[in-house]
Length: 541
Image (cartoon, rainbow, N blue to C red; front, side, top):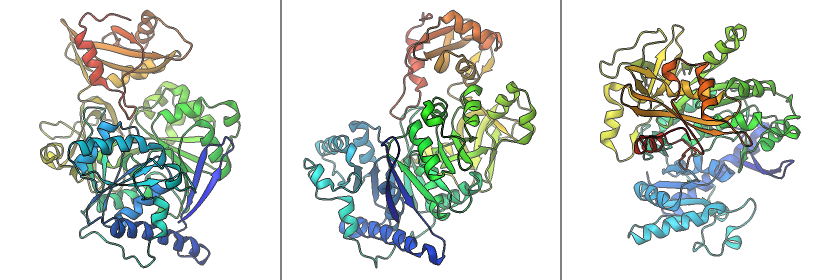
C-alpha cells in the first residue's frame, strides 16, 4: 500500500492511499506495497500481539490511513475488526469493549485520553483490558509524543517488525464474522451488529454497481469508516484499484480542495454534508466547475429543495440512499430519473424523497403488513413495514439471540420503518414505527411534517413527536432550532405549516432550542417524548 501525505490549501490534513490492484506491470510496485503493508499488519496482529482466530480487534480512530489498512490486516490475521465511533465517552466505550471482549485496541493519538479512562474503568471492574496500540500522527512516533501512555506498542513500529512471508489466516467458512459494527442508538441502546465475510464481500461488489463506479475511482472519505465499515467501500475501493483520500476532519474547504486537486469522483455521508457544501465560503465554492463528474450519495432524510438545488448547481450529482447498520449501509439508492426533470418543483421534491429500488444482490425489498406478512398494494397510500431479505444483511446482533430472532422472523429483516410502495416500484419511508403519530385514528408521518418545517427559511433543524391529547390521542409537537441570527414566533411557524399541511398534521406546539442528540449526532426522539409527557401542559416556548 502506497501512502502519500498531502497538504491541502487550507492546511487541513489529507492523506491519499493509492491502491493499484490491476495485474498490469506499471502497477506492480503498488501491488507489492499493498500486499506487504497488509501482511505486515496481519502478521503483527496475529503473532506479536497473540491474537487468535475470531478474536475481537477494536479501532478507535478517525478516517486515517491506518484505519483503512486495519480493514485488511485484521481479517488477514483471522480476527474480527470493530471500528468504533470516536465520539463515545469513556464509560460507553468501556461497556462496549467489555461486550466485545476485545483483545486489542488501536487508538489514534488524538483519542488516547478517552481510551485510557475506559481501560481504567475496565480494570476497576476486574475485567481484563485489551492491549493498546497507538496510531501516531503521520510520520511521527507515538512513543515520543505520548510518554504518558503505559505502552510500548506503536502502530508504525509494529509494521516495521512484520514478516513478508506471513501466511494469511482465511476464514473456515464464508459465514464467519469479519466485523462488528454498532448501531447509532437513535432508538435506544446501541447494538453490536455482526457482519460475515460473505455479506461484506457481496455488498462490496454491490456498491460498485449502485455507486456507478468505474475502474480506479477517486474516493473522498467523508463517511466515517466506523459506520458499516465505511458502507463496505473500504473493500470496494481496493477491488477497483481506486485512490482513497483520507480525511481526519471534514469541512467545506477540504471537500472543494480535494475535489479540485485530486479529481475526486465519489464521496458519501449523512445529509448534513449537503448543508456543508451549500453553505461553503465563496473561496471554496468558486473552485467549481470541477475537472470531473462528482457523485455524492447521502443516506437519511434529505434537506429541503433549496439546499439540493444549490448543491447540484455547484456540480455535484446527488443520490439518495436508504438503509441501516443491519443492511451494511444503504440498501437502496435513488438515481435521478429523466422524467423528474420535467416535473414541477414540488413534484421533484416528492420524487426525490422516495427511497429508490434495491440493489442487484439483495433478494428482496418489500413493504409488508407485519402481522400477516402480506405485501401492501403498490398504491402509494397503504402503510406497512419496510423489510429486507437477502445475502447482504447482518448475521445477527452480538450476544442477543432473542432480539436477532425477533428481527429476522419470517425470513425477513424487519427494519422498524413504516413506508408505502408506489406504482412504479419505488418505496417511500414514512416514519419509524415508534415515531408515527396516531391522531384521531389517522397516521401522521413526522418526516413529512419535518420536511415542511425545514423548508422554512429561518429553520435550521426540526423534529416532531406526538403530544398527548385528550380528544385526538396525539397531536404533533415540533422541536425547532432556528438559524443563527434569526428569530421567529411559534405562531409564524404554525401559520407557515398551515399553508402547506392538512389541519391534522399542523403542529399544535412549537418548542424552540437545541435538539437532543446522542454521541452520533442522531436526534433522540425518545428524549423529546419524555419531555412532552413530563409536561402535559407544555405550551409554545
